[in-house]
Picture 1 (cartoon, rainbow, N blue to C red):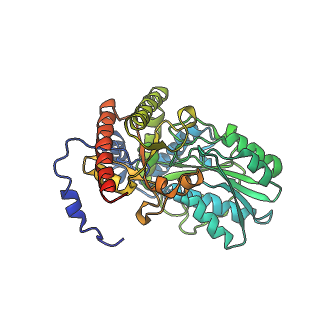
Picture 2: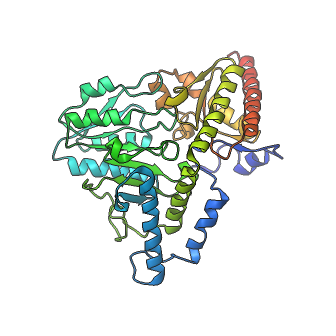
Picture 3: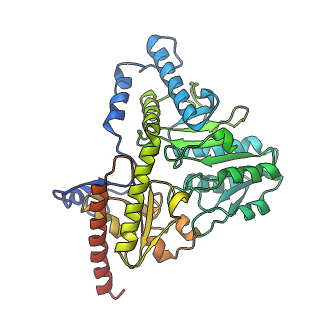
Amino acid sequence: MEWFVMGGVEELIKAHGELEKEVYLDFENSSPVPGEIVEVMLPYFNKVAYGNPTLTHKPGWEAYEAIWKSAEKVAGFIGAREPEEINFTPGETEANNLALIGAALKQKKNGRKIIISEIEPLSVLHVCRMLESYGFVTVKVPVDEEGIIDLEELKRVADREVILASFMFVNNEIGTIEPIKEAVEIVKDRSPESLFHTDASDAYGRIIFDVERLGVDLATISSYKILGPRGVGALYVKSGVSLEKILEGQFGTQRLWPGVENTPLIVGFAFASEKAFTNFERNIAHMRHLRDKLIDGILNGIDETLLNGPKGDRRSPDNVNVSFLKCEGESLTVELSLKGVYVSSGSACTRRILQPSHVLLAIGRKFEEAHGSILMKVTRYHTDEDIDYVLQAICESVARLRTIYGSMGG
């Protein structure tokens, strides 16, 4: 990235002045780590378990124990049978790469067909595009206007040639909760030897699920999506499932990911998981309340707005994605930032290159509707007062930008 096309990051920060209040809602991109999680991690940098977990000395044994106990905790939260089924990676992107490339290479003797949905994350879409250059074939299943995968179309395209299917459990952009169990049953019925992967990063910590009951072979989860540290995630690999390694290097405790493990981040991930599942029902009810207050406040208070994704129980409890007509999403994120409200526009993964979200286009949004969207996610730490402030800031910002749009003949 060039430093800095828009005139200097220092000037942009100065332009914010003294902010009345700050509300961070851009949890799709990154997460400020709560102090209680940071405090748990700190000793592992220089006081305990700072050794290489493969070495036979006290710091190494401490690191090994910390990683093992972290894997036990994470395994328990997703219904995995053994800690060995949890493979820590540097994040969601790496876990998705390991799942898809590792499964495709291992399964290629059985066929070349991979099935995904039209609204998978870029770390799935781009990997599948790369695999196509090696002779694999990707079939994309469409979704309806709420982002729910078409199970009838899945029945039509699934056959014995399928070696791998990958469908997100919860869509990261529009919050749609997908019928994963039904999708697994369809694929496995037609191709029993195939592997099924789900990116469950936006389900973990928001929905109680059990990988055994879902029937998936592989599942990705992420730390920062549950307010944990960046730089760590995990891939669940069901016992008996074999993947090709996609990296080579120093042997560690992670059988599918070489190198020296980042013990402080792994410990932070496990503790963030504990916090996410403590008082779970109360926290989720609180998040749903704030989500609906934000959605209803926008749709009822601002004309020409569109909710992207479903309402109610088919939507993740934290997700709000709205399109504002006659208002460009990137401009709205800047306007809101100047008021201390931090959101992302369109797809968080594509906003730097100003392309409309592939997810919004897949559910039938026009280019201008997709470009006018913003994505927000609430957490258990947010309050009603935070949402009141956000609604006020959005109303003022949209009104100002639409005035500019009108004056330009829009």
